Amino acid sequence: MATKHPGFLPKKPQGVITRGKTAQNRLRQTDHFLMIYDPQLLGAGDDSIFVDLGYGFGPMTTLELADRFHLINPTLKLVGVEIDPDRVSVALPYRSETVDFRLGGFNIPVRTGEYIRGIRAFNVLRQYNEEEVEPSWTALSRNVVEGGVLLEGTSNPNGSIWVSNLLRMRDGHWKQEALVFYGNLKGGFDPANFQPVLPKNYIHHMVEGEWIHSFFEDWKQAARDERHQQAWGNGRWFTETANKMASRGYCVNTRRRFLSRGFFVLKNLPVKG
Picture 1 (spheres, rainbow, N blue to C red):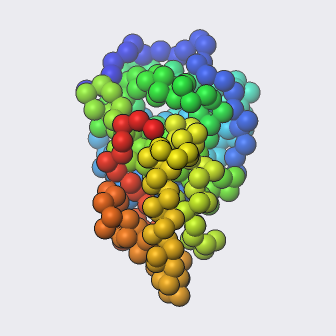
Picture 2: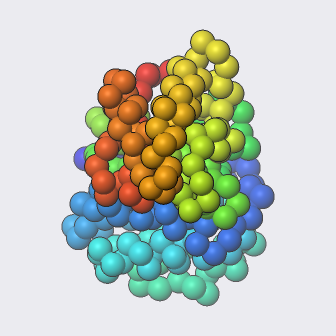
């Protein structure tokens, strides 16, 4: 079941206009992550939609998302949502049977009978105050099916490094399932590189006494302990550092399919901070 609200196309999108900057393939690895993390979410089934919220000045990230997800489910409907009417106008010529573009914000526009199975919202909440994060998540919960996913985070300009909250819809509310880190290991490996792209609900908590600060201190120490693994490449170093963190009690997904691609998936997170 979804968190039900009447179908609507909002007259006044909720939120503020983002800078809108993006680049080709900037969010490629967010798509790949979801494809290996939860392929059933994208698989054939009902007519629920997957939303690319805040796609920016051009429709490329939504179109790229569709190209990748259609490898799993060719009939999956993708909807790009933008708060800027001009950006929507630019994207409308790219509509198809499975891709649409709509004016909206955190109050995602859905039509009667539509429900949402997933939302990707990258580089959207970074410009908001921290106290606005959870209300924004709540607004995004409307019309999301049970088990639906919100991937909300921040990337650097070319997408070579990002960090994202992964939330799952359970009993009508988002439950945080994981904090996901991605790094292109060809450029090296240093846990500190992830700090500038922490999502808004974490970035201001990088101070002593907060769990996210302690986590990074432990991650940096584990990387130093495993530095000798770099002789076999950054990928080996990254993997063995993750294994070290798991041995120290952190709930890290140590499956090769994630670590070999540069994904560090951390679960069992504290509720706050």
